[in-house]
Picture 1 (cartoon, helix red, strand yellow):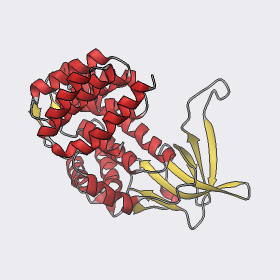
Picture 2 (cartoon, helix red, strand yellow; picture 1 turned 90 degrees about the vertical axis):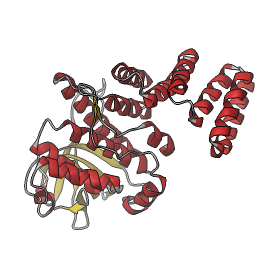
Picture 3 (cartoon, one colour; picture 1 turned 90 degrees about the horizontal axis):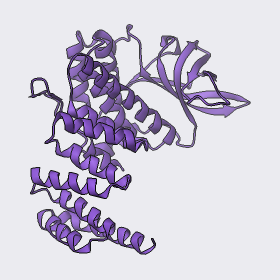
Length: 348
């Protein structure tokens, strides 16, 4: 899954009004070793402890009250509050900086990892996911402007120091509320943290924060006439991670309306079309991707898998052979995929 997300998401921004490439060159592609190192460095706490995300209602040195993020239902029509006790051992993190509980304010978004003790929920670690503008010395005062904060965050994400980048992105957005690139960068950063995170509750919280930031960038950009195909593509990948294939399909299609030559959006749309059973649509997207990039082996392999899922072994064999000729290192990976697809078809 990590490999797929790294290859599906892009942080190269294009403002289509001017067709100008903005200088955001970091991406999840090709960062396997760096991400593994970052994972070993940043993995928080015991994985069995439950986590919850929400918005701070009130905070004191002894306890934190938050409104829990939760989907409304018939049995739960409104906001649910949770109180967690704080101890001297509770870690409160804003990026890489440790804070005091009294520095939290109503409206801050947090994720809390806690344990049950004597009938109470006791916080082990609290991560501030987005903080209000105020003095967080020394980190908050290190950047004199939104642009400087954004540039510092970009350099940190290029080094896979994602937790450390978040406060700078918070600062950039708070200093310039319509800083769309900062929203997109923060969305990308949350997505990278989701890829790295082993704890499923926290992983889900990161996906949701990433989705919210990309949605803000897209919606606010649309109001100003700005349309970035990569933002739609990246949000589509997030929807795929959240098992929302229909919205993913819509976003990949919108990315291609903006830029019909955007190969990554074509191959991502092919993937989601396969998931929805639209084999012809998937084949059309992959064929178009190969027209644009005829010497990229993995696109042949992906089309080969699609032919095989349709039962056309001859076409599949031709594509796999072309794939392996161009990229021999893909042979082992796709040999396993071929065996899996053939076994699935035998059991149909």
